[in-house]
Length: 170
Image 1 (cartoon, rainbow, N blue to C red):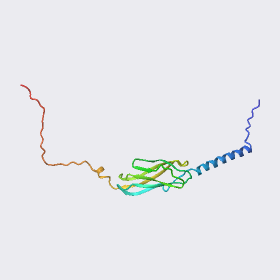
Image 2 (cartoon, rainbow, N blue to C red; image 1 turned 120 degrees about the vertical axis):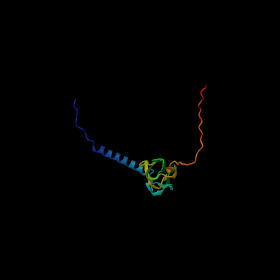
Image 3 (cartoon, rainbow, N blue to C red; image 1 turned 135 degrees about the vertical axis):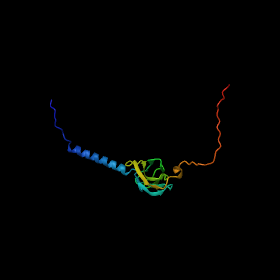
Image 4 (cartoon, helix red, strand yellow; image 1 turned 120 degrees about the horizontal axis):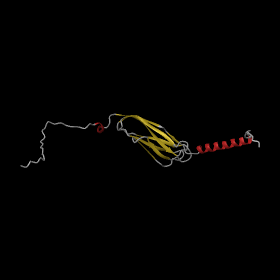
């Protein structure tokens, strides 16, 4: 029995067929993404600059569906509890826009940078990130800063002491 170690190379017809298959797959994938819902934002970062303690901490991000199928925002999640997002779960039709309202708790003094994750049915970008940043100036709320108070007086305060001592019997 003879065993050949010679490998046969694919013939020209096989190579031509493989090229056609890959080209077809590429066009199909390109068409699938071209006809999908696509998320875009008017901005991805909002800078509050410097704001006063207790100022209005709300801003809006505009979301646009630049695809040709309905876009659905399924979840918007802030990086911490000091940031609160609000959005509609109604589909955003092709070419239309919607708003994501983001609020920041401006009673927290100091610089801040927060991220907000936006989850959608965009096949190429199912998780998008938008950011807010700024600095809250001023002092913390008076209730947070006040130390416990104690007053002293020179007035005499009447007091009596009772004991439960028993007399010894004779």
